[in-house]
Figure 1: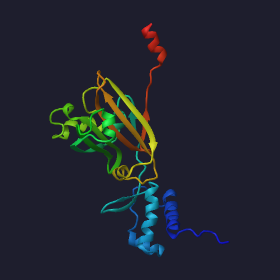
Figure 2: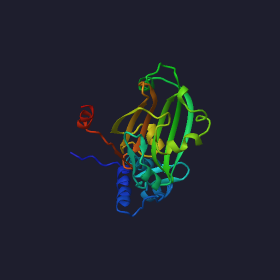
Figure 3: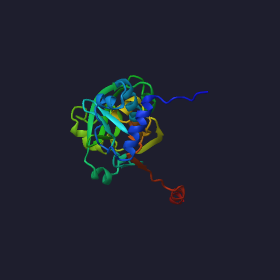
Figure 4: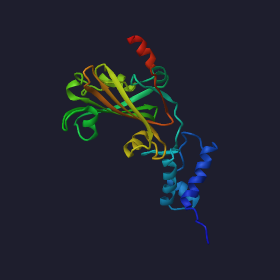
Length: 247
């Protein structure tokens, strides 16, 4: 009985992976052109691209449109502070983080109606934000606010919310309560594309819902961070302290 012969593209992926992990090819270094690598390994361009797709899926290589394939740099970690709904100001300040923002008015549908507790079709302001350190994405946020709660000019003037979004903080009025649901999972195709990671490395996904004193949802945020580029810290209060306060 004959064994299974490994596919040629897996052999190429193994060789390139070995060069990356041993430091022969450095983080941030551009790989030779696809045509050049195909010629080096004596394979078709299709086979070579299949090999690169394996490494891209593992998060070792990222393809930047119009520039080529690069060894992915291990980014410096930032800290997300749970309960406050913000990046830690010290770690955020240490890195030259910048943010891209796209804003629009959308209608609530599907899971958004549940998150914001609004009827289907209700107008919402949507802010899609990507924070970057240099060219490396650090986080993705999709933030939704009931349209009537959006501060004047915020949808028309990106600078009005840029500082807040850079910290991934709550955009709307100061909330009375913030509820966060955290999980590690595989990225969606949109998240993988925006964060320039493959489908294999996990993301830290946070669903944050902020409410006012009446219980009305004033903001819902869907946050995603590459798992190797963020730590999340949560501080809790002991129930015994509350009992003593009430006594």
